[in-house]
Length: 242
Image 1 (cartoon, helix red, strand yellow):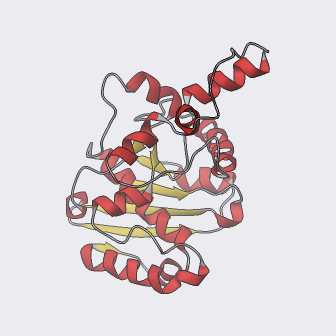
Image 2 (cartoon, helix red, strand yellow):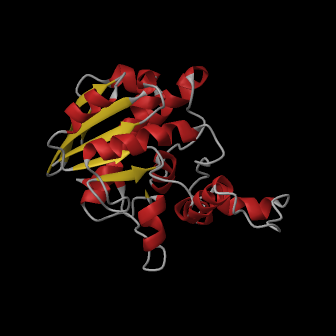
């Protein structure tokens, strides 16, 4: 099996792509590419069994309804948007709130944070990849922080050039817990760039999804998730990936 993990950024310059080949008891990082524009991503994902993308696959239903109503001049009065609790459904998707309630992290708001620029790029990339199922299609939405937390690995504090020592420690933790993973000469980039590290974690999440070992929405949430997207959180131990 081959999985691809994409740590998507608004700019190709900060986008990293990891390609991992899996076999019984082992996995190998065959490519780790950064920067990566959409054309390069399409090339690297050709023939992949599953793709993980660290980016929102959609926007909250309530946010879309608000924007459409406002655009058409049909926004009803009495929304009480001075109350932050009334604004939360506009800012966070069902899947974001599910991750928060499980205490697996705090995803950024796709409608109220700069990650919206990443989502703009992501939905265009999904169209280029021919992905229409935003819940459990060939490409799945990933959130590395939640996966790392589930696997009891360092999940915060390693972002940014000033925190490379934390990133290096995070990589060492992963290497110790996954001795079956051959980074094939890419160690230097993994310990110096958090985008590359997250791309690898995202490829691991794609593997878990391919094995049917991630949490999916229940019947009530699924129709909403098909529009908003759904974060795949592993429901297995790291060792179970091989």
